[in-house]
Image 1 (cartoon, rainbow, N blue to C red):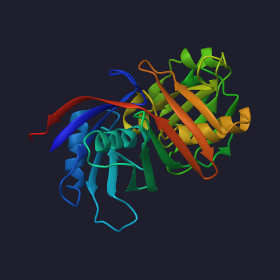
Image 2 (image 1 turned 45 degrees about the vertical axis):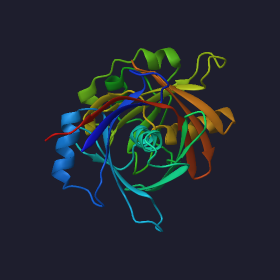
Image 3 (image 1 turned 180 degrees about the horizontal axis):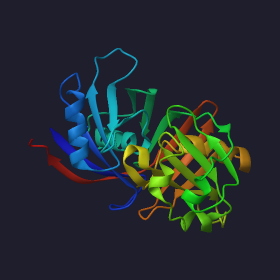
Length: 271
């Protein structure tokens, strides 16, 4: 199997979020244990596996995502990476339809090389901050929201951008407070800086201490900040060490995520 490593939500290599991408020739997936072993070996936050589907159906490719520890319901950056590989290799043009555990997703390539993903908008439910989450995160929440079943995070609003950037959480303690992890966010300090809000994402329950750039989290960040800022089209900066920009467009029960990607490694899986 050919394997590629793609940096997603960035225009330059060694930034954004790296994902493994394996396009399978057969019309089915290998057994789950083999997929998980490959993802564990790749050891990135997500490895995507995709195989083509027969023509005439509701989707063109079947898509699954694995962290080093488990399979997940939804992943934005590895979907962007997969679409990037399909388009840069000439395997697909225009809009690609994927079927995944979270439903039908689409990825549309643009002339400038960017790709727009069409994902379900996360349902946000205000909740009380769990006891101990402030101590685990190292900052006091202003508001806390549950993000629904496909994401399974707590979205925690903090006081300001500086607080988000300076977080040094107790990762083991955070694991007790949500299904997948914590999305910490705040408004941008300088609205003229090219982004509207910042975030950092910690997912200890799926084997990821901090995810560099998380597309799926932006399906929750988009409705949260669109309601606060009064605009449907925004740009989020994920303020991890690698950083990355996600352009979000809220369209009711769907959220559009636009970003760029760069292939940095192209090789062969021998085992």
